[in-house]
Length: 385
Ligand code: ATP
Image (spheres, rainbow, N blue to C red):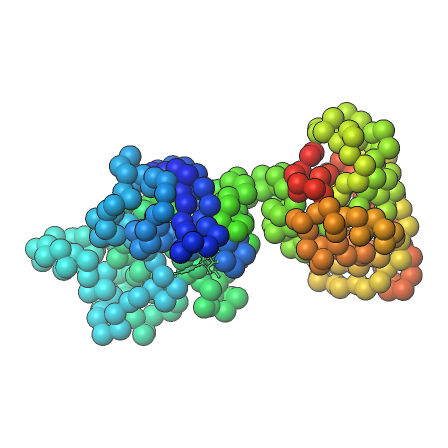
């Protein structure tokens, strides 16, 4: 097993914009790190540079303490698990797992010993004589990992391994991969564009955008302390609401009422900025009638019309329009290259208790936990709080 250190990694295809732009990231021995970001952000390119399938334009790739920029993939001793697991259909599970050992011409008894060890860990003993076609998706995944274990690879690298599967199987496989990685403790880098995978699998998540690393943090920290508008909008479902706000002294005026920022973390950074964006996750809202009176005062209560409701069993979403003058929205649009037009909507999504009796077309009273609200600089996208 090994650590993976990336130092100022750049990848340029031709003379275009770098696909990976000055990425530095340290992955500890045994750590499980997810690379996530929208299509084209460079996550697969970065993974392929770790494995050696792609040349590095500049920067250093250090695996297990050794610079590997000029090493061929086979000399890096990493194991890549692809979407289709790349199992040989005509070979038994045993021979699929044994494949790299046969290539290395290991003696028969050594092959048997190592395959049996892997089968123990992966609970594959009773399937060793089967062909891949007769296995479930989860079992195939384990065989693919078995092949990596017998090779005693330094790290596992996954490139969207679950994207071809249906939602139910994807959920099962997620649990399986997570369980195996914990058990084996092998350094793992996993690429996905699926934020559920990103948030549930890894020790840490690295968010990429247009080749640039935005934030590397635990899932919880990403969710609670996104460093900028991009991460805030990318992580979380339904997404964070962004609303215009103006600053007067220490008070923010927002479409849902005033928020006093005095004494709050980052309050000093707001000074001198007139127009800001407040970021409110849907679950920061509650039905005001259900809020414990003791905590009412720490937030703000407001009335709003309910446009549409969606009932999900354990909670419900409501879409509530808010007032934002066109001039302010135009100003924001000009100021903020970070927000897309979809994020500058004039309605917020709120997620509240399923028992709350909201009626479409009627007004309702909501409570907002203002302690949790984020404040962003629209010009830079930075989270100031
Ligand atoms: P996806 O989730 O869609 O696979 P990604 O985040 O993995 O996207 P990459 O495949 O790493 O993104 O691509 C990053 C950028 O590099 C994209 O703009 C892509 O078009 C470009 N790119 C990737 N491979 C090549 C190539 N061989 N030649 C030229 N450009 C490439």
